[in-house]
Structure formats: C-alpha cells, structure tokens
Image (cartoon, rainbow, N blue to C red; front, top):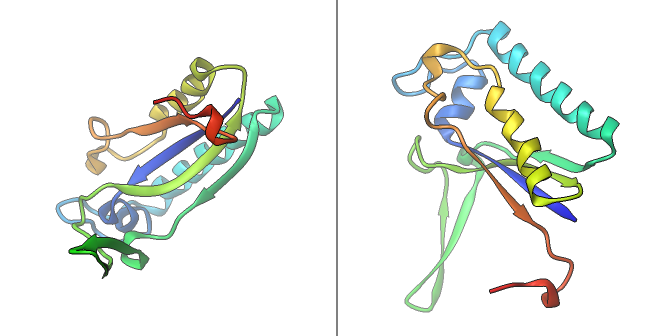
Length: 141
C-alpha cells in the first residue's frame, strides 16, 4: 500500500530556514540549515535503500501560493502569503510499505529533525500520514 507523508510548515518556517528572521525567531545559521538538509537526505536515502521510497517533493513558500475559494457561487483567488504562522503543506513523501503502522513509523523518524532551540518547533511540529487510494472503490467513509 502507498502512503503520503505530508510535511507541514508556515511562511515563518520558510523564512527561518532560508536565512531570514521569522517574526520573533532569528534566522537559522548556515550550519543549522545544513544539519536539517543532511538529516532529510539521510532519511530519504534510508527509504530508497529499503525499497519503500516512491516520490518526494518540496513546495515553494506560501508567499508564492494562491488559494481559490468559492464565495457566493463565485471562485475567489487570494494570493499568498497567509498569516506567517498559518500551517500549509510544505512538501510530501510517498512511501510504499507493508502497513499503516510502518508508514507511521517512517514518519515518526521526522520528529528527530534537527532544529535550533530558538526555532520553537519542538512542541509545534507535526506531519500527516494518509493512505493513497488507487480508485473510488477503495474509499472508505
């Protein structure tokens, strides 16, 4: 079965990991950013080596996003950025593994992603894990 691991982030997070101060948090240093990239590279390599890696992509910062909503029967387009602390999809990984528990175990390793103390991520971090369906007959309500 395939599962999508959805990594969440905010404009503030994007700012900090690209060397800009984010609200009340200072920018990450080049060493801190490097440690994050090294961790993610190793995490992905482990998935490739285990044969569980399917795909992974990062998304641009919310400042480059557009949201389309229906209001009074009319689509309304809003350009980003959104509130600097509003969580959005920052990227995803697709894994193919034996069970939902295994996909959750893979995602849980991301809890050890290095971050500086000033980043205030320790209690705010999360990812979502969801099964991917191949057809409407697999949808469970």
